[in-house]
Amino acid sequence: MAKLNVNINKLALKNPVMTASGTFGYGLEFNDFISIDEIGGIIVKGTTLEPRQGNDYPRMAEVPSGMLNCVGLQNKGVEYFCSNIYPQIKDIDTNMIVNVSGSTLEDYASCAARINELDNIPAIELNISCPNVKAGGMAFGVTASGAASVVKAVREVYDKTLIVKLSPNVTSVVDIAKACEAEGADSVSLINTLMGMAIDIEKRKPILSIATGGLSGPAVKPVALRMVWQVAKAVNIPVIGLGGISSATDAIEFLMAGATAIQIGTANFLDPTITIKVRDGINQWLDEHNISDVNDIIGSLNA
Image (cartoon, rainbow, N blue to C red):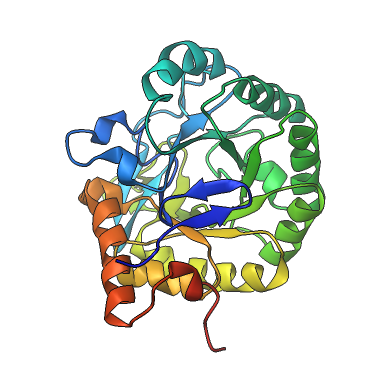
């Protein structure tokens, strides 16, 4: 069996397979299907300082090769997470990572500071790329200066591993990644969803309640792969790749493009065991090619 351990700065992963926020609940929901402690890291659903109701229904729509969503970061707030969810997940034997979002710099910083107090949460993923909220989210992540301001504010109050989730809905994702690195990000993850839309032609109305939503699934993979490759060449911090990954082959492509680890999102809805299948598939490919360490293929693309 090949060595699958990878490191995201000081964060040690038993394998490079993680779950994407918003697609895996708090991990507990998948206990009936897999041993969730076998995953390299679980990024729990988005958490904000105050409770959020999210957007009105309908807020999900199936489209060719993917899905649209405009859930809008529905959650019960960071205090509920700390008092009710954290006790249930703190002893899971893998990296439990909280996706943190906000509407203002102060929101982000206050939420991150509260999570910083939890001993068994070794990292946060800073969401500056959600396209489905009216304030905050992607509003910060579409410019280098906006992204830098959030990372700086959070870095001042958060002393564990800081991952920043980037938006693909930008002119230059490389510039934004470099701005995050300059302000102290330990890693960047990309991509979040692409802006999309679906229409009910009989009603002549958008299918989603707010008209547009985030596109995820296999349709976005070529875009995600290109952006990961570009960013991995431009920064000196680890890159986490996500976007349309639904097989070990997909995951290996991202690793070769420069990702140190990958996240699986939409595919979890289709197959709740996909994370373990991808992990095992990576191992099988490495064995078949006489490669003893997954780190040997990271960034190995000949291009």
